[in-house]
Amino acid sequence: MGKASGSLLIVAFATGLSLVVPGSVAAQSRDSGPAETAEKATGKGVVQAVNKEERQLRITHEAIPALNWPGMTMAFKLAPALSFEGLAPGAKVTFTLSKSPEGGYVIEQIQRSE
Ligand SMILES: [Cu+2]
Image 1 (cartoon, rainbow, N blue to C red):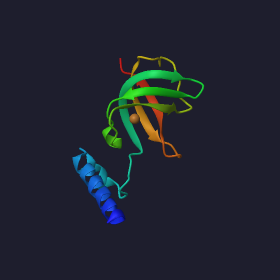
Image 2 (cartoon, helix red, strand yellow):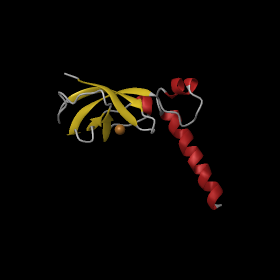
Image 3 (tube, rainbow, N blue to C red):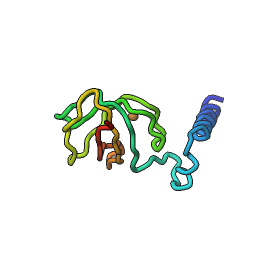
Image 4 (spheres, helix red, strand yellow):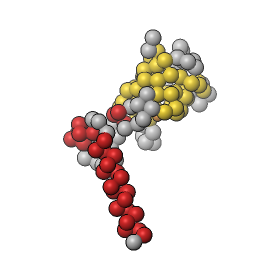
């Protein structure tokens, strides 16, 4: 029992998940890998904290369907070319993420939403 039934459960769970995600059909026809993630994605959110020393923004973002991410609060690195001007706690922002070589996502473009 133990091992075999455990991995069966995981497969069933993963399959169930991909069926529920809207937009997954388009993503699958474009990509071959099962654990694929988009190279770029846009999101909306509110800045919670600014860390200029680390070049990081803590953002509470809405769901990002392209990445299968639910809404959450997390820290993002800003691309080297970006300025922190106008970015302060409470600012509503729209941003574009791009995949970094390390596998995480960095903000390559950001602007205030209003
Ligand atoms: Cu997130």
